[in-house]
Image (cartoon, rainbow, N blue to C red; front, side, top):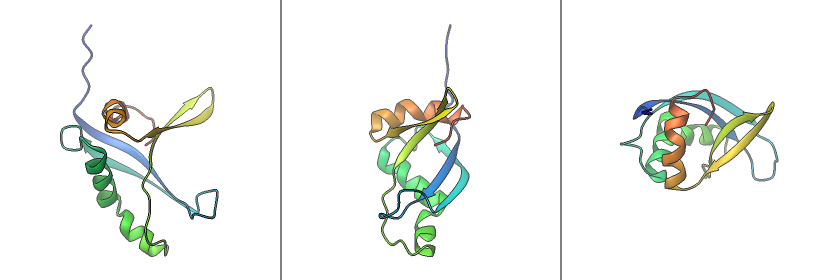
Length: 107
């Protein structure tokens, strides 16, 4: 059996805004972001693409946040519970991105 993954697609995104002193998000936005495995092949490039496409800098300014840290996670429901899996390395991004583009999980 041959298994082929798409090299480009759309990733569903939940953008959550947190303040340092608060434990829960004060604002959330959902979106769909186009990704191409060959063009967005590093953490730096993928994060830059998300920041630009979702307008994250403009949104942080709107909420008066100033600087921000972008953290990437894959969200998966396991036995009815939401589990977050951090995406912190290029290897993890390369492994997760094809599944995120072809699945219903959130990023």
